[in-house]
Amino acid sequence: MTDLTLEQALEAAHPPVLCAVLAHVTGDADAWLQPRWRPVYNPLDRNDIGITPEDQADLRARAAVALQPFVDARHVPPPPSPEITRRIMSHVAGADIPDAYVEFLLDEMALEGTSSRDPRWEPAQRQAARRMKVLVIGAGMSGLLAGIRLKQAGVPFEIVDKNPDVGGTWLENTYPGCRVDSSNHMYSYSFEPHVWPQYFSTQPVLLDYFRGVADRHGLRPHIRLNTTVLEAAWDEARALWRVRLRTPDGAEETVEANAVITAVGQLNRPRLPDIPGRDSFAGVAFHSAEWRHDVDLTGKRVAVIGTGASAFQFVPEIAPAVGQLTVFQRTPPWAFPAPHYHDDIEAPKNWLMQHLPAYAKWWRFYLFWSATDGFIPAVTAEPGWSGPPTAVGQANAEFRELLAISLAAQAQDRPDLLPHVIPEYPVGGKRALLDNGVWIAALKRDNVRLVTESITEITPEGLVTADGGRHAADVIIYGTGFHASRFLMPMRIRGRGGVDLHEQWAGDARAYLGMTVPGFPNLFMLYGPNTNIVVNGSIIFFSECSVRYVVGCLQLLAETGASALEVRGDVHDAFNARVDAANALMAWGAPQSKSWYKNETGRVSQNWPFPLVDYWRATLKPDPADFRLTEPAQAVAAE
Ligand code: NAP
Image (cartoon, rainbow, N blue to C red; front, side, top):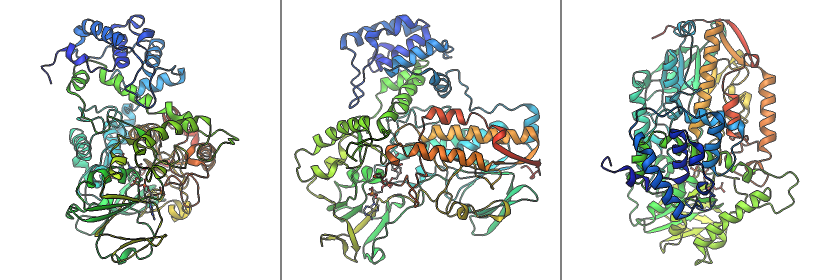
């Protein structure tokens, strides 16, 4: 890779990102943000950027001269003025970036290496923090992040995880074809860039990344693996949490902590469907998140239940090897065209990220913007929409048309499949997937059959459908998702007065900003209720904002000497009312949309319905007025 020249590498440069780098490092925005180089993106193929080949060639030739002095420069030049930055951003986006976004996007890019997410604590606060102890539950993406920030702030902490290693979802899900479906340059910590082998790397690569982060940040000594939290109870008199653990040897142990941060994810308790006779099946059956690598599928009759994000990835992988594959589909998934979904990142592109200052930063910006708030209007309901229930508004209907064309084109030679690959629900009603054609190609194989009749029974021999069809199987694979809305289950959490959190929630988990709940002082959730996103962005962005806020809450304790903070009920309720009203106006909140985003009460308990910038702003730092602060702290012996 290193023997490439700048000229060679520039052949792979993304022209709008190149313009941004040039305007940034040379400081000459007028020269590099010319209208002829401003992109007009094709929504069905973002590689089609509407810049003529001649103009692209001219840009690359000029860039080769202008950027030579900056190759391998040690520091990214300081960011330009806010006005120029906004112009650069708008150029890359091919759309005017609102002023309100500039500060947020600049912070996300951390052009100067620091961001609002780096803890900045006064010496006196650091001194006070040394008397605290924080227990983090979970060593996946968000738990590791919490550990990194607590370490930077100087707060003593311990992380426990039920699994034998760090990595969370990337450790647990090992099914064939498992890979990230947000671009890796965005699905990565803002402060931990990486040389990714693919735009959407595979599970082993992601797991290595998180293991590497844990090692580089010296987190391992703070992590206890194979350790399960059974119960956490708030000791009111002493203002601390007593947390009962199951240790690796099966014994029980109680630890104390001033604060508890849960980082247990939303998608790790497999959900098996309630189909009569499920346990009678005589063959092998397993869930996608508990893949049985010891079961050789070669030549077998395999039944897959579910066509969500997991099945969408593993069905094309196993189809060539199995004898007969029967895919049971209740609802087809929407999928965005992503021709490069499985592609390696070309060496010249990675060269640019490594050798040209700011290229990786502006590339991340491009991904961040194009995959985030830019999508929101297309999944927002029009009040009073009188069109068909297949959409929630005109923009959503138009988006639907685009995606339907792409799906239909793939199945046009199979009239039997065609009606079954285009969803009836609005785009955004469920998680939309990334499509490079392998899904429908798999369904079209001679040894694959798509069954859309509902399953009525499972027998020792296989599955029975409502039309009386009997589908013999040697193996059943459940791609049926997770108990997502059962937040924090199966842990028992008891707050002030011994109140059980799950009883308080009664199946309808809510929190303030997804993190704090009245009656549960110093308990903070990461990836908690209403912090999931459907079309806009990466969960890592949310976790970085949440952790900043949680660390800010701890800083508030250190600053005030209070032992506990607890969100006010009225603040919590008003927030949730706003969330519910906004979710009702999104495609996933529409009555005709059914998914794991809604809990058993029908409320959307998973999703954040506002632009990302709103979460960023709301979590900059806690407002003391939102909380009740109590008494001086009871120190837990620091390590
Ligand atoms: P999922 O999206 O909840 O899909 C479950 C599938 O099982 C759906 O197709 C569902 O149909 C079907 N199903 C459930 N019960 C059924 C029954 N009785 N009969 C027939 N079909 C039934 O689960 P998932 O695919 O594991 O994905 C869950 C989430 O994890 C995703 O939305 C995504 O956020 C995340 N994920 C991410 C990635 C990635 O980034 N690479 C990969 C996998 C998962 P209905 O739609 O009709 O309910």
